[in-house]
Each structure stands twice: as C-alpha cells, then as structure tokens.
Image (tube, rainbow, N blue to C red; front, side):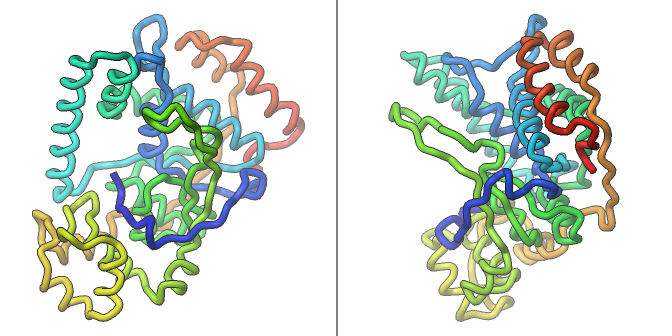
Length: 331
C-alpha cells in the first residue's frame, strides 16, 4: 500500500540514460506486484505457460531488466523477509479485500469489469518468488533477502552508499532513511487510465530526500511523524488529518507530545512503530556481488521452460551482447 505522502513531495525527471553505470536497489516485491497487476490479458487473467504456471512476472522482470542493462543501470533486487508482527492486521485486511474482489469478479457483467476486480486480487506466492529469483540470477543480477521489509533493506543499501538510489513506487523507503528514491523506473511509457479509455505518459522521476526535508524545514523524525498521521503499512492514521495538516502539526509540536496526544490507529504502541522506522531490522555493511549474464541459460529458462517466443527473447538479449561486446555488463 505505502504511505500517502505525495502532496508534500517534489520530484525531478530522470532518464534511464542518466542512470547509466549506477547501482539501484530495487524493492522487488513492489515491482513484481506492479507487473502482476498491470500485465494481464483482456479478461484480467495472467500470462501462463503450457503447464498453466503464471509467467506475467517473468515477462515484466525480463524486459524491464534487459532495458536497464542495455543502459548499464545495475539493479540489486531486494526481497521481503518476515513481516514485523505489528503488520499482521494490515496483511489480514489486504486478504479480506482480495476475497471481496474475487467475489465481485465472479459476478461481473462485462469483461472489463471482471478484469478490474481481478487486478485487485494480485498476490505474490512462493512460486512467483522462486521463479523471479531464478531468472534474476541467470541474468547476473544480485538478489538480497531482507530480514524483514525489503524497502528498509534497500534504503540501508542506499544510505550506506552501496546503491545510488532505491527504486520503488511507494514512498516508505524515505522513512527508512533512503537518500534518493526513483519512481516509475519499472512502468515508464504509456499507461491506460482505468475505465476511461485514455492514456497518460509515465516517466521516471527522482526524489532527493535532502532537498525534500530542507525544502519543508523537516528532518527524518518529523517525516515519520507525518507518515504516522496519514497512515502506514502498520497503522491506520489519525482520522481527519491528511499530509498538509500533519505537516503543520509536526512543525509546531514536539515529538513526544505528538505521539502521546493522538490515536494513530495502531495495534502496537505508536512509539514502537516510530522506532522501527528509525531503526529498522536490516543487514548493515552488506556486500553485494554482481554475476555474469548467461545468455543460453536465460533463453532455456524463458523459452524452453516457460514457453516465451524464442525470437523475442534472443532479440532482447542480442541488444545487450552487441552493445556491450567485449565488456562486462556489470563492470
């Protein structure tokens, strides 16, 4: 879900070409979820192989990753570990909404309506994770499993200067201490607006945390307080208080007084959530090694095992081999 901080944020456009040679820590679950939600057939169903296995996520990962590699952008995919206990209610609520969407999809009167509800049932299971990791490793792309939240670990890689930025659609990494956040790196291009029949152009954008905080006369603690007001993956927020009102409260108040004066809609003590954002469960000092892209193994995995068109897969890979001939893709 992520935290709704957009009204307070400013960003600058960034092109893939500008990111050439830079390491980007990708929030893997966020990207895979986006692929599973957006890459669907007309009736809302997933792409599948001859064995009936979902291949939508592999389609998204392969083509987006090869696009990045073509411009020498070096991604590290960070996967979620075990969710903190105080996220249990959020997870249960998400499952409830998925079940409601499944029921509505079954009753839908049109294909478009059914597709809309099916997109709301998206979930990432063990097969999705395992097959994603296998493909990424064949591409030579490093995979990191976080001890808890993937965004927190990605933010740690960024804060420790192991990565130039975090790549995610959500803003949570800003709360966990990332210095730069890149959005739309996985969905750039034309995007159809739901139920409108119109398209919008989506381009990558970068948020500089230092500029954000200085521009609003904030620090990270105050940004976390604002997030707790509007709601996070761990709490519902304070009813009737949005980002702008929260900003005014935080600017004029003291942390301890604020935390004790409002009902932030959380099961765990609100100070526990605040401390978790400030000091998340991550692996510090992590060294990440890039591998070698195995063209034949990738082709076998995508085409031989999952029935992708061989000419399209080889064509995408050939652009890498021609462009990077004689060079290490990850050098």
